[in-house]
Length: 149
Image (cartoon, rainbow, N blue to C red):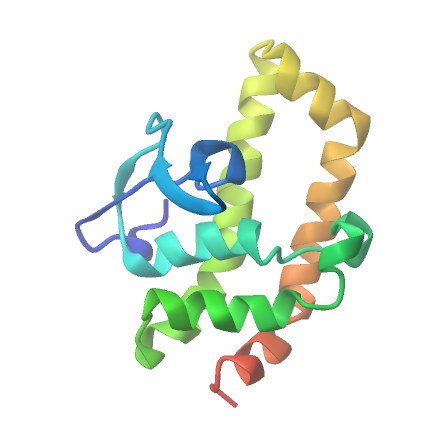
């Protein structure tokens, strides 16, 4: 990850829902630490919020979640307790976390990882492009909902 987003905190870096164990509707454990590395709270929140809000084109959001991504972003960031001074950096980190994740997937596809290859070649690359576009075009809305404007 970019040096600007490292402060000595150890990050999981892959907080997608597949890596969280739920019991009774509550998250109770985080698994799969193969991407763990030095990072920061800013990077950690950006990685997780991007997937959990989710921050992506509405075409790629489940019907039940459409229209609420920005409100969920605010809830996520507030619940995490991310300081107001770090929220601007978190928004900046979103595109970096997305690009970082896509690089990992592209590298795996290039190395012959079949499950990633199926996902990437059957719409994943297009979804990734739409997600990047959504993140870069919604910066002002994210700043507003996080109380930065």
